[in-house]
Length: 266
Image (cartoon, one colour):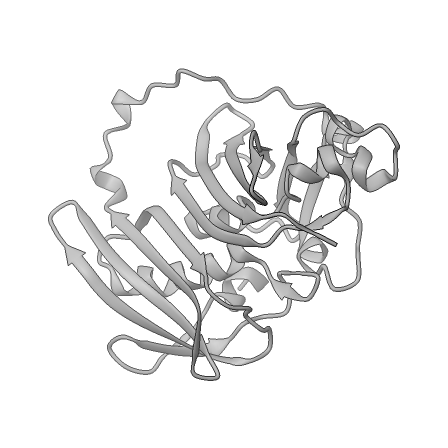
């Protein structure tokens, strides 16, 4: 079993209750990555659903979550129907709810892909050998397990260059270091594995905690490497949005994401 699969596995204790540990392997500055927490909760809801495709998953981060701490997940069935099932999951530590997520599941085999239509093409991406590998940083354990390659146009902020990008954009390539195949749950992690786009234009001047995170899963990759692009267009009242896309190398759209985060200056 791959590490990611182990780290999103919870022990079922009852009809709606799960228990387990929030793993330390997917953290940003010692805080569990929001995409990992979303995948953890989605995995529990997926086990409850007879339909397995998480077409929409949304998480709200209510309080700081800690790694290596015994945690409880409680599920609630919102609705079940012919085509869609909807669930809610609450992640609780020390009696306090830390994260709440909602997921809508459908049957993958019921999806009619013959009507697929793209009005936008996959982003152009520089060759991987020209990109900047996000380095090992203490307490940033996510990058010990994910290969994240930043396009040169987006990497000036982390390389200490004085001239930052005029655009709040992060793009590049991503895969698991252990070459774990892509599936729906891993896309929830990947869509939150790049640095916030505003760092490309502002530099490392702020902490940018996510308030709400939502991913729509559209397809599964046919390639190991995945193209990723994330953009922010508006920073107002210390709130910034982030819109993301994941594509495979064959031009297949895998997921679209939206985050709302705070911009907290150091």
